[in-house]
Each structure stands twice: as C-alpha cells, then as structure tokens.
Image 1 (cartoon, rainbow, N blue to C red):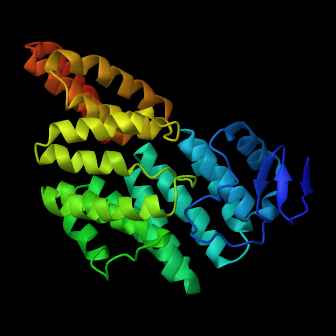
Image 2 (cartoon, helix red, strand yellow):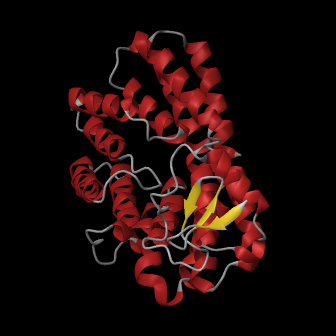
Length: 313
C-alpha cells in the first residue's frame, strides 16, 4: 500500500520514490532511491498504480524493470501510460523509455519512430530530455547501418559534462566504433566514464563504461587491458542481464579460441533472459567465428543462420 513518508515521498512496499508530480533531474536516470534489488516491487507498483498517476514513480519503476531484463513489459507498460502522462515532458519521457525498450527487443524501426516523436514532444525540456532522445534515435540508426543519418543527428555541440549529456556522448562513441575509428571512440567513452564516475554508480540505467572502453580497446588490439576492465565489470553487482551479456561477449574476444565457447554460452543465456535480439545476434555470430577457428564449419553455419534470422526478424 502506498503512503507518504515524512519527506513527502511516495513509498510502496519499501520502494522510495519522489511524488508523481516531481521532475526527474536527468530524465533518463532513475532516482537512487530505486534500488537495484527492487524489480518485484517495481512490477507491483507499475501494475497496481492507476494510469492517471503516470509520472516519476511509474517512470522509475519501468526503468527498474528494463534493467532487470523485461523490455517487452516496459514497452507495453509505457505505451499504456502515454495518454495519461502528466504533461508533454512526461509523455516524451515515457516514449523515450519505450524506444529504449524497443531497441533492446530489436524492433529498430519502432524504436526510431518513438525516439523521433519523443524528441519532438520534449518542448521546453529539450535541453535536458533531448540528448537522451537523440541518442536513442542515433543508436537505432547505427544498428540499421544508417551511419550518415546517425552522424547528422549527433552533429550538434558536444555533450556537456553532466548526466544529461551522457547518452549522446555514448552514442557518439558507438557510431565511431561502427565507423572503425577506435581512437576517437575511446576518447568519447573515456570522457563518458569520467562523468559517470563523478556522479556515482547508484543510478539506473547502469552505465557500463568499462564495457564501452573495452570494446574500443579490443579494436585497438589492447586485449589485456580490455580483459581487466571486463572482469571488473562482471565482478560488480550493478549490471543487469543485458549488460552482463554484452560484457561476456566482449570478454570472449580476449580468450583463446577453445575457451571462447563457454563464455559465449553464458553471454547467450544472459541475453536470452533480457530479450535483447540485437546483442544475441552478435553473440551467435561470434559463436560462428569461434567454431570456424576450431574447424567446426558446419556447426558454425548453423549459428550464422540463427544470427541472420534474429537480425532479419
């Protein structure tokens, strides 16, 4: 049952949240009061709260569920809340979070559309909400191979040194990786890491800056440093299943061929749990490459076909 604590915050079964009328300071980030161990409580809050109360409490509960690997539930929940969101800014925020969930699900066209509408609806919150929407739009385009369009959206002024600018800065890094410019990507990811560390690690989404940097280091052939960062990332209790799956896939690239398959199998398990079709397709392609190296060509072809099926779905 929900009640008000002495600080005027809404609490539900131990889940401390700002009141629904409050404004998220960084929009895409959940308040530290929403702990990483609260997905069950967040689900109850999202299911039991009237849609008319759409605001920061439900937004942050949905963020917790996305972190827990439930993008389909978040996409459906955010769509149901859109017409009840209090004001255009909250409507844009729910659309952006839905875009992020759709991106995880591999529905790239829908993710692109929702991010575009969210950015257009941000209104006078464009300076704080816009960078997140732009980053989601760019990432959906990058995943579709539309690099020039993504670059055009990210061509504005460099992101500031605060949490508002982090999504766009990380999207720049991913675009630079896709363009095979690892030195520039490493610079972008390092700057993002400094910002994330300065603001602490208690916010959602979990900012997997170690994996970002490691991916750039792998393109540069600096395998030992990448391995150390990924081991550190996996030792943390903060990553959700999607982040663990990505870190495990990258970790496999630092290992000898005969050791890669067990690590990739663990990555696939995490990514199936998180319903991330895009990242799972990458794991399956890496499976195929590892099997090729080991001379198991027919089995490698099976994994390549599975990866292609996920990418085409």
